[in-house]
Length: 627
Image (cartoon, rainbow, N blue to C red):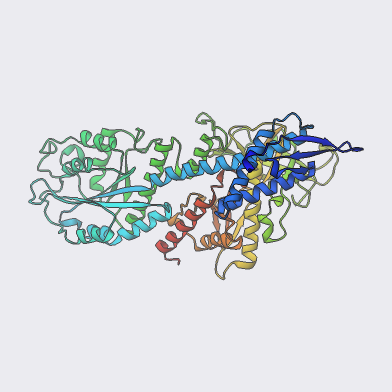
């Protein structure tokens, strides 16, 4: 009977003696409700409530049906001509568009996650010289395979790793090769290596060509393929070294380096060489000359370096760190190939941009970068308008949308620390660029007087401004800048609360630079203070689950976990990057992952990536002994 009831269109009913229309919004006849213009917020709130229940899996079947009917009704009624007044039409359209954006974005994130999880399926083949001088290095690989995997999982929290082993000796040795096919069992891998005797090898060069031929036909199947070659001596052939060689003309079986290296590259195998001595330098240089650079489809696409990358393996800790980095870099390269975009940390956002979330990105190879600060006296100074998010008073404010992007206002003098009048000087050329934005040197001038600029002394201070490569539409504060400001405002406030109430004794303080939005001569920029000079910039983590085990800090890990716990799982501060200064970290450009996909912009990848960040942190703590 319900399905047979007639559907109603949105109509205007004017009350006698009143110019303000009442609006009947009918999803169907049984759900008709009279709404005034001011009641649209209630409709939006109901829409948000139902969406959250669906996202968390707590929605009943009837609530899901209600949400679908609500969306369908909104979409059908945004163009209804009976609705009088542009505000009403715009308000209804905005509700429908916001609903659509959240659903589209959720689909995009799942698409990216699927590609990332595919790239994290890794085959790692150790190709190791097994002659007598290599015994300690074979033992090192055997004993450290779990640590290698742990560090790699800190960098790529969804890592699914299989390992194999190809040992080689010399061409005339009775047992030339030791072979273990790919396995997920680290115990089986370690047991196999325990049975290998380091022996053989007459002259210094070894049968590397034979081993490379086997490696190229190893039966690679997974998307990410990594070969780690560890050796202290080169292959046969005097063109590759200056040592005594029983086969100075090259491999006695006629195997050519160019052929086997090309075969490896065509298989999509990333080749890393673990260097133990200088005897192999000439060989690796010649190999790279033979095969060219890594800019070939299927292998490290987008890089411009040599195909074979050298890892320092003379010390065990360097070997472990080098191999884990190699795995992470190869995952990033594979993700780039399957998604068609750049390195993993930025590729997630870029991949979403390809689907329309952040706008098309422009190539910027021809943009001039200038690290030097300009001569400020030669630059024009323009009056600027500064926008800010109102300060938060308590922790629960960060989960209140009314305190977020829609609460943006012009910054007050107290928020800017100084005067009410603001002027800007901005460098023409950026000093750096990321996947989406340029960074430029700038100066901000402030004074308390409202008089003209010629009648006052302006106090100038160094700043940094960042602008998107693809400009947004003029006339309104672009949402991209607003979301950047919301990220920094929330993260900075959480850091202040953490330092005051939650930081454990001995942990370093966390300072996050607050950013604002400025409008200068019709253009928008993000505005923030520069990082302290003469300090080394480090990327400690990302919003994809990556943690830098080379620079891991328990203080940053504690802060990250605390943001998740303090907001009861609503959000987590990620993408931690900046500098370490004595007893504190000074960070910039954080990303916030949040359950609410309508907040925090393109770098908010939602619940699945929150889980990846926490999983990567757990792996980093285990690997670095910070549990």
